[in-house]
Structure formats: C-alpha cells, structure tokens
Picture 1 (tube, rainbow, N blue to C red):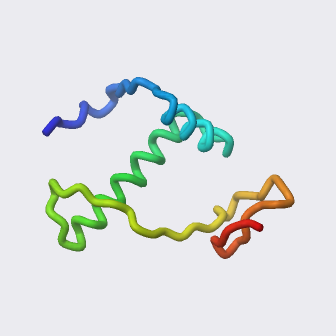
Picture 2 (cartoon, one colour):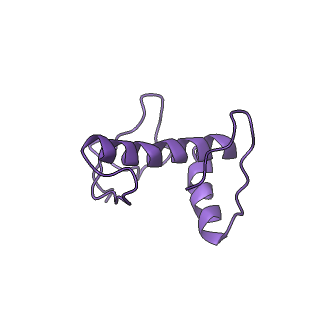
Length: 91
C-alpha cells in the first residue's frame, strides 16, 4: 500500500482519453481542473468510507450500485432539455 503525499505536495496523473473525456464533462460546469479532481477524489473516498462504516474491510474493493442526484441550489439548467429535478432521465 502506498502512503498519501505530504500536505501541500502536488500529485501528478497522466491524462488518458477516458480521463480527458471525464474531465471535459466536469469542466463544462465551470469548475477548474483542480476542483474537478478534488471533487472526484472526495466522492470516491466517500463511497469507500461509507462502505467501511457499514462493515466492509478497509482493503475491500467496493462498487457503487445505485445513486440519486439533484441540481445544486446554486445551479441553473442551461438548456430546455435539462434533466428533471427529481433525478430522473430527461426525455
């Protein structure tokens, strides 16, 4: 197991095609690359943390099975075909 870098150190990641595509989706919201990576890491860590709190071993690989979403309170849809506020699929 690796250890996390010291606080204040940078982390380097090689960008492949999938990561670039994923970053593009997040950057379309107006956030920076750094904020997109921070938010993604926090989300992934939260999934693992929650699984561990529910009894999964610390070294277990867990999989997100289901989720719900809602627009952030400071978010405004930018198109007429924006997804419905209930988290469903847009028509």
